[in-house]
Structures are given as C-alpha cells and as structure tokens.
Amino acid sequence: MRWLLASYSWLTSALAVVAGAIVAAIFLGVIADVVLRDFGYQSPAAIEPLCEYGLLYVTMLGSPWLLHNKGVIIVESFRFVLPVRAQRGLEIAVYLVCMAVSAVLAWYALYQAWFSWANDEGDQRAITIPFAYAYAPISLGFFLMAFEFLRLLLCRDTIYGKSAVEREVV
Image (cartoon, rainbow, N blue to C red; front, side, top):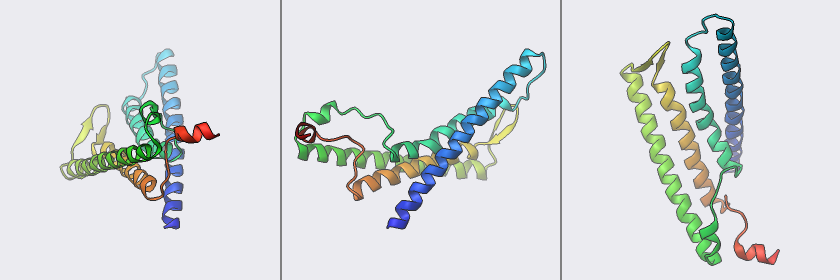
C-alpha cells in the first residue's frame, strides 16, 4: 500500500510540474502574440486555441496536487460549532460525496473522450483539436481527486485544520 501512495504522490507532483510548464508556455504564447501584433505581423492562429486548452490542462493536472497538499480553500465555520465526533462524521460525509462526484465526472469525461475519439470529433477553429484531448485531462484529474478523497478516508487523514477542541487545548 505504501508504494501505491508513494507513486500517487509522485504522480501528482509530476503533473503539477507539467501544469507549471504549461503556464510558462501560455505566458510565452501570449507575449509572442502581442509582440507580433504590435509590430504589424500576423500571429499564428494556433496560439489562441492552444492557450485555451492549456488553461484546461493546468486546472485539471494541478488540482490533484493542490488537494493532496491541502492547498484548497475550505469553509470551516459550520464544522467548528459541532462536537468533535460530529466534526469527523461531517468530514467523512464530505469525503464520500466528493469522492462520488469526482468518480462520476472522471467516468463521464472518459466516456466522452472515447466517444469523441471513436467518432473523430474535434474542435474546428484555427487548428483542429480532437475533443478527446479536452476530455482526457478532465478524466485524469477527477480520477486522481477521487483517489485522494479515498486516501483521506482510508488513512484517516484530514484536509481540515485542527478541531475546535484541539485549538482550545493548544
């Protein structure tokens, strides 16, 4: 089980690095587009759709890493007024719902990727981008987030801070 968790941690970190590289590529693409236009040249038509798809990839490849490293925004005001046992129960319920929603979205995106690939469907703009390339990172990102919620449940980890009782003790 440890090798699976270590592999998962390595994978989320690697995907976060890829997401960072995509952000850098988008940054350079936008700069190139603006500079070329300012000097009166026609910028490559592929820059705009590639930057748009890049934003999707950044979001879906970086989200599992953010969740794994507790970099998500959590509203805890309701949780703090509950007793400690109820806090853990609410936490488990949140993880189960989030895991189920993430798994359904991952499955649906995978189905859509396969369907669009089988039917040769694509985004026809300046360049043709197969729709499967849009659905694949969605499927991967939500699958990894579902796995992270499962990990939180099985390892009794938490994405929340300390409970209200623990804060008073400290």
